[in-house]
Length: 267
Image 1: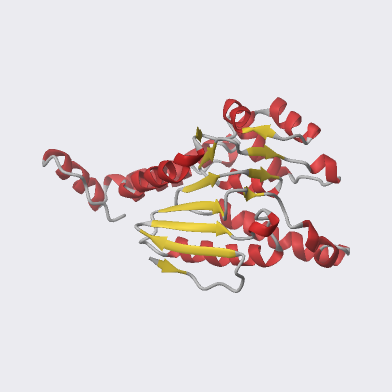
Image 2 (image 1 turned 45 degrees about the vertical axis):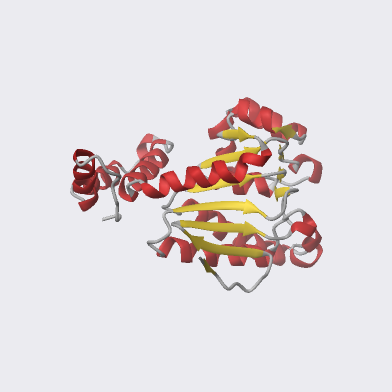
């Protein structure tokens, strides 16, 4: 296991068995995300993305009360009180959102407890979301007179549709795990006692599969969600061709014929 040294103790990052673990470590405030935490997130993503030993990334909240309960509003008087401060704060938030959007490796959100506001935003960056029974979700922007930017809103719309997006934001109410599963906000809802096991098995299964195939799939799905005029079909074709010309493709065929698990190297 390798643990990253970060400037704040409110974020933790470690790498083990092909999985990079990101932990929001602010349990006293139900893992609400502050400025220093966002800075650390950028550092973690850069490290995990550049390390070929990391095949999958998992996000989780410390403790059993929350994944992320939102932004740390207690900082706003100091960090977002003036237009200039808001510009700096929002610029950092935009960098974090962009960094998450550009992650090329599979990203899983392991959700236990509250997933509210910015927590929902964080979870929506993930390719898959697995939640423990008893978890609660909500976007209370209308209760705080906050505006949600287009890109953040579109992520919700793409998952649950326009009508459910309006219900989530208009009401600002909390939704149960069962409701989140029914509307498509999460992929799985599992007993709380099984969450660690289920997510670890999911991440390990993905980590053992061919990285080039996973990358091609992630990019193609993202391109398919764009307007047709904005899609980079040439890039999609290139990534598929890379799979077919790879050593991993040869390994996959050989392993199948030899009736053994393949050992993929991502090249």
